Image 1 (cartoon, rainbow, N blue to C red):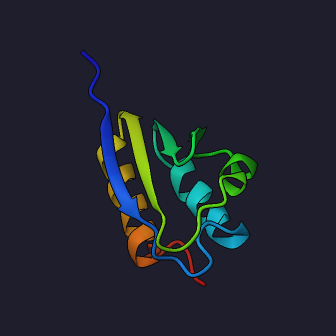
Image 2 (cartoon, helix red, strand yellow):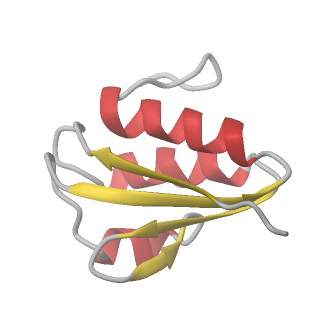
Length: 94
């Protein structure tokens, strides 16, 4: 049986998932050994920069993150922190 993690997150990033924030998101998502999807007016891969930007996710919008794979728990946790708090780990700076 496959276990898939799912999390609903309110985006608290100024300007939502515009270019810079989307680049951070994709960079974070790409580090994990799992498939990541964003659900917001459709479903898109969490590592597809242009598709995520085309979702036009704004600050205070709610998105659903879905992850399936070896690192799904860590991926969901890190991406939740980024979307809800703008929190980046030590590998990034603004």
